[in-house]
Image 1 (tube, rainbow over the protein chains, first blue to last red):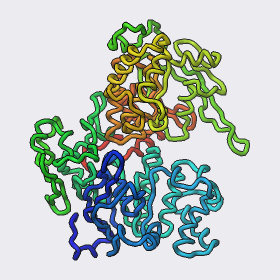
Image 2: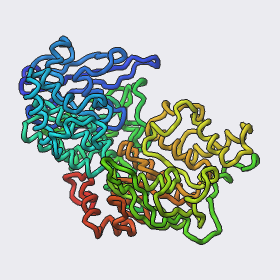
Image 3: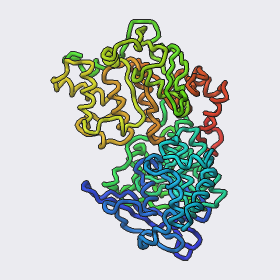
Image 4: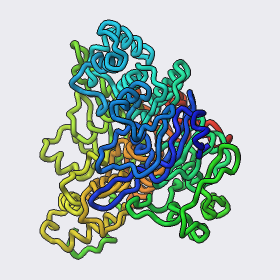
Length: 341
Length: 286
């Protein structure tokens, strides 16, 4: 699953192989993404989960080359979209894919919409630029797109400015905009983090519904395992710029193999009992400018487990059952070494 | 605080001998002029009282008026009508200069720790300024200031050696700890925490919730914890008030509201909490 050979790559619409994105800063080289591979099939849905700084967003920004370069630099790997490498293709060709074949929704709908332009201008732009549709036709389609994401009174509202919409409505506009060219892939980078739980539910349902209607594949990034579990079929758990575990969503929740996945699950506040202190993952996320030679999660493991963690070489992913991959670190894979679980 | 006080003495519980409710909110109303001549009833007749040491969870979706209510209690907005009483004293009728002094007793923690800290002040400056607001005698006494700041940082789980750093050098969770330390610095009796964990990673939320719970327990603080997420409020609050369209629609003990909501609106809020689709009994109930 994670290491598709060249002969398999046609099976997947998108296959990322051993991506390395480093940031070259004054403080040193930050290995934000350090060897990540993933595959996405047509119409599939993939979740990437991890804490801030785990490299989940950089992975997706790398795909569309949205990172400032420098300081960012690809140090290796490839990302093949229908057989062409997104990381090396000329920018001109990439532009025909970005926004047309691969759409993206960002975390904060206020900063990702242009406050100076009416929603109508922003919604019709992709249609006119990518598909060459005329003004009137584009406007009709844009109104239909707004209706499809559940904005009432779309004919009038489309002429409003972004600030005239609430947070949830703005995120709906973003979704409509990202899907208006009927892309093959939708990348959603924490699309509901800035929203209320009730609005979050509406937005998640909406993404799910539009995905079914249009057959769009989705890459969904979140720090919240519960949110990802509702949207995705397959989940990658990232830690310190690497994938520590990847499995079908049900398998990941029922049979988590890596200590970090187990810790993430335990730390969801909604799943914990009142009265007791909430479980928290001890320690701090790793400093990506000083990579450890061994298991990156070891410092956050209890002492007994830490002793068993790989110290001198990085744990590699192994497939334990069909589709279930986990970093092969003896200190992290053994649930018996977790304290008080 | 005198310069001779040791850091441990500094953070004794802020007790008061009075027996009346610490905070009373009496039919508070705030109307804003809306578009096309309409009136937005952001807070529409809210009455409740809060005992010392109690934590009230205020829940509702965005636009329900919970932030306006916080701002009214903080005296950051004048009410259209109604009163806010802190220890029996009506804050709404005090002149602004007196309110500013009185505000040392009621402090606020904001949602976004990236926006609520002054990026050009070190943690030391931010905290010592807030401490000096209560203890003007400490201005200029660097040793006492350093000691107090170190004690405060330790109290919120930060390394005191980092006091010369700037906010951007800290992670989101650490920044929220600084913001909490800043609100504790003037030794308030009441803390209003407006969505203090909403901007944080799920795994960091638990750390901040634990910290707040510990502070309430150890310092005898009274707190209003505002959030849109019932599952988070459940832990920290003794009582939960559910707010909808400017009114409190349901109030009750936290477990009661969470497990046996009476109002259909409360049930809708509970249904929206993201659930894990599998794992049987580890689902959040509701």
